[in-house]
Amino acid sequence: MVRVARNMVVLAFSFAAFPACAAEPLVVELWPGKVPGDAGIKRRETSRIHQSPLVGPTRLITNVSRPTLTVYRPDKARDTGTAMIICPGGGYWDLYWELEGEEVAAWLNSQGMTGIILKYRCPRRPGEPEAEPAPGPRIDAQRAVRLVRSRAAEWGIDPHRIGIVGFSAGGHLALATAAGFGDRLYLPVDAADSQSARPDFAVACYPGYLKVKDRDAIRTDLRIPADMPPVFLAHASDDRESYGGCVSENSVLMYLALKKAGVPAELHVYATGDHDFGVRQNDKLPSSWPGLCVAWLKSRKLLTPR
View 1 (spheres, rainbow, N blue to C red):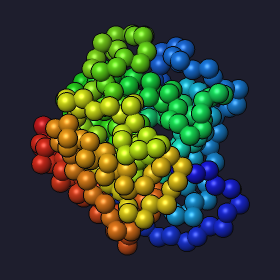
View 2 (cartoon, rainbow, N blue to C red):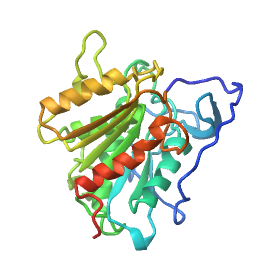
View 3 (cartoon, rainbow, N blue to C red):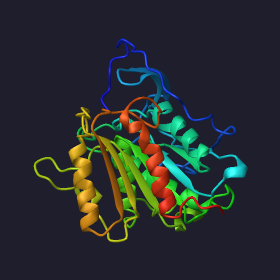
View 4 (spheres, rainbow, N blue to C red):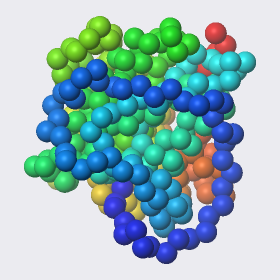
């Protein structure tokens, strides 16, 4: 996502939100000590209200140096045991914590899934190229899958139903985690790192950073193994987000690469909807994607009662 000036005029938007999460979340430190591979930043973590021209005011978090998992459990009566790690977008500069984090967790809870928001390190560290994905978040996401799987019994999660969902830059992060699970990105720090880093499924909405610059090919950090988990993709044809190349053609390219590799995949490209549609229920065409995703999960037996 592009960083936008704070004094932008706020447009009025109305949307139907999913019911609030069932209970106060559990917040867990991602790393027990020093964060691997991080040069660190001197600025303190901050939260602010961002005035988005597409969705109105929404809360952003930045200057993250201590990554965490925020765990929202669903109501026990409808808990399926399925969980998703949520990767908010923000161009690897910020985290769209409300729009692509808390609202997504509420949607997952409404469907009987545990929503786990990954607060990954941002912004880019000094010297990291602005046009490329930051390396630190990939390390955080790989650790998140292992840590969630290690705590599955404690959190009422089926260890074979742990997925990852991401938006914009977070969509790239979700796909990179699903594709690169076989590459250990850090040395083990505790017993949790003995767990598999492979998500059981991945969902990417309007993802960026998919294509190499000068030709129609998937980036090398998204090299697709034959045992990559199933993928669900959603994008709007009129997405105008230039930062990270969040255009629908690149999601089509990813879908074709997945199909060629024999990885089960489903793609939805909407005629309109632009960027940043999250899971909000409104009169825009992409508001149907959460329902289509639930149908996809059910078709893969990922939401059957425990």
